Image 1 (cartoon, helix red, strand yellow):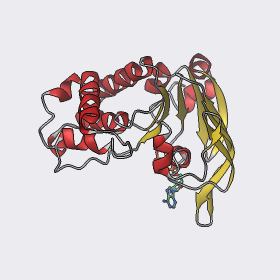
Image 2 (cartoon, helix red, strand yellow):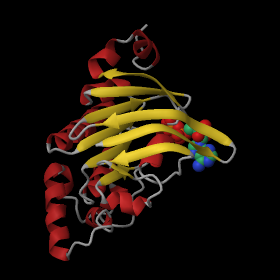
Image 3 (cartoon, protein in one colour):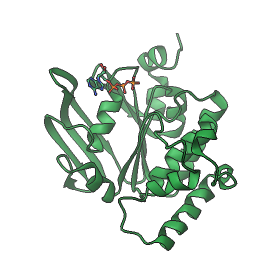
Length: 236
Ligand code: ATP
């Protein structure tokens, strides 16, 4: 479904990603692990068309997407839920969700139906749909951010560190929801520092270190890999 081949990307004179390749199959959940500053956000933003690549190729559903605008990529069904949530705090939950449908040429009733569908996935948000997004807890705000991405009807949902800043129990809740989304047939590309949570969710993963993919394998292989255990799972 997604084929990233040998991409290089960076900012100004600095190169962040060198020769990075990865793939995600239809309905699969794949994680990219990496420490702070490894280049995870740069990678996910390059895939979503928010950071240009210097070389290599990105194909989605068999077609080249690097060079397309981010909005076009969203319309093809590849949607990014960015790190840091980026909600509009003075707008209601419902209004924030509606913004996720901006790229679709859907009528009011289709959008309302889509909001109902999204709220079914996040029952906790149902009763809070009219409150300001800024008044929600961190976990609830993360749910709204994921819900907003779902409003664009992704076939592949990319998530940039959804567990960031959340208490362990909320991390579990967020990951469970991402798992449910995956079970609905939506492929997941999850970029995470929280390797334990990510490897529970994903069936396959990659490790990005200083801008290069250094390890790849099934979630089971990664969770038993000595390097992964020492560097990312805190097991000595
Ligand atoms: P984090 O967990 O902190 O988000 P990351 O693995 O997602 O880390 P990136 O955010 O992709 O890493 O950053 C990789 C490198 O690129 C870092 O050295 C960072 O300082 C640099 N970088 C990121 N964004 C920019 C930018 N807009 N301009 C210049 N340098 C940037």
